[in-house]
Length: 168
Image (cartoon, rainbow, N blue to C red; front, side, top):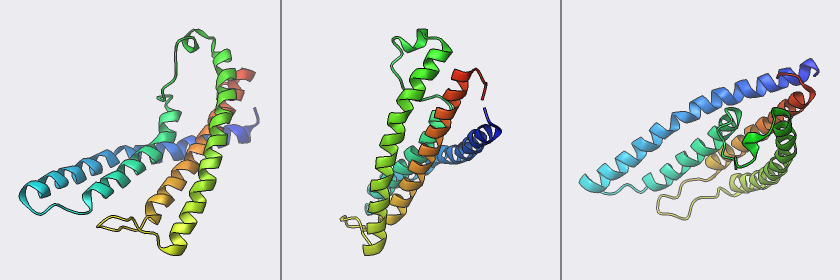
């Protein structure tokens, strides 16, 4: 494999490792928001912002942590026959199936960019009592989709390396 391909794989995985490790800690922020929600409902007036902020935090946790999850091979797959295949056969199947993921992520990114542009242009807000702007979480979602696309392409290249007998 050309050196630039291996360099690309290493660079994408380094970025996604750092972002994924950061995203892991968002679960504590989410827990803090939910704890405050419980405390404020019990002892004070209920907070208007806690439900939506918890949802935004969960989206960021999920979308930014997804590429790291793929990198660690921690994603869920049906292992009825896959586990008994040789590494080369797994690489062929993975290289084929990741193309569907790349297509899906491309369509998702296209819609996400349009939605984010609309949100920025018109100052879109949530229709709840708190009424937060929606563009920050939409930008986070687009960044997460781009990182997932980069990781999926790196996985495709790693599968090609495995098919050729090169250890990425």
